[in-house]
Length: 187
Image (cartoon, rainbow, N blue to C red):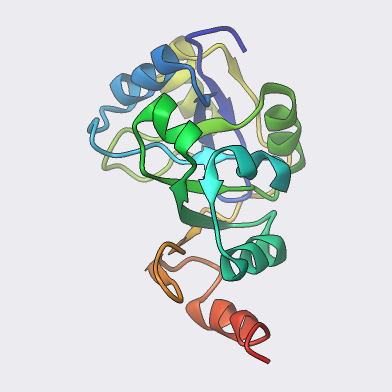
């Protein structure tokens, strides 16, 4: 990816509009293209567990949940490392490892990506590739078309900064699934 450019990638949930993690020009472009409020952070997609160590702080419960449910449709809200906070000013971040081979390959090549659902702010995510090309084609360097069926359900979002955790949005992975997993740590 070139500096300042955006790409469209498939994930296991919906298409994503993506920029390199520390590419501020591209990040600003996401807000403009989507019409998204600057106060709303853009989540981070990773392709391996090792990539999270540079950007987030997590406890044993979060680690167990991430290693169990990733790759998959679950986003974890975590505190940032001092290094990441110094680069971005962010004290918290949302991170996800999508369960999609092409997305994982693109992230492996480019490093962690800022990615948000492909839609204009406040509208449902776009799924029709021709509509995507018509609306977003002129704003992106590349459109990576879908190779697997997407769920069209946004990911589960869980905040692991609190003890034990706080469910912010329930998707295919339910609160009970996480609670059942975490009972293993207390045994």
